[in-house]
Length: 224
Image 1 (cartoon, helix red, strand yellow):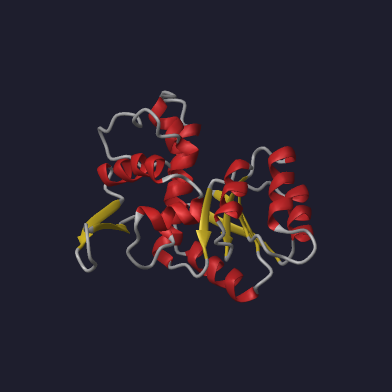
Image 2 (cartoon, one colour):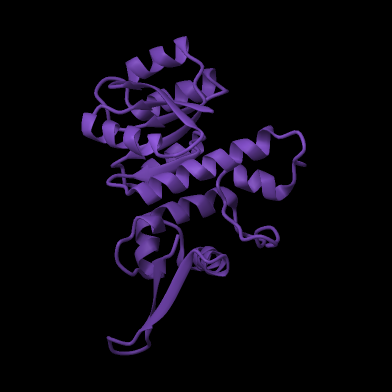
């Protein structure tokens, strides 16, 4: 059983996440905290496997608590559940070692996907029968691969891939390479490698837009 706490100052969001969590086998919600300080106190007094953590809170915010967790509570993993959509915020969280990033408002399907990925990661890492291969290490940071797929192509960095996927996941309408270049600050030449890989692994779709003058533009959509 994965012992979980929710650190979220919005009671409606906290209740929603708690209700979703109850619907997923293998998770146990121990406590809910309404501030970073209260969340830190829970970490000091309880054994916590997973923290569902908001970013924007009065007093100690989620980023500060995340830093403390990663420096002092090595047994606890963190999944951010937040309205933060700035690519810099996402990069900061990933660099600090967050396991996943769920953007509000979120559906049960998106929440469940993240929880099941986390559950699979723990199973793979904790099972003595599972050899520690490159594929297992990739799954540790939630790089999805279809069965039988080899490692990532040369030049496709795992952390950058997760950052790009996190930005694409939030796009409600079809988007171009130029759109994502502006959001992430990553050049279109570099982004194309990540887009191609995401298409090969079934997470990204594409279509040509012939609506304007000149050459058609390739538009993409996130498939998940």
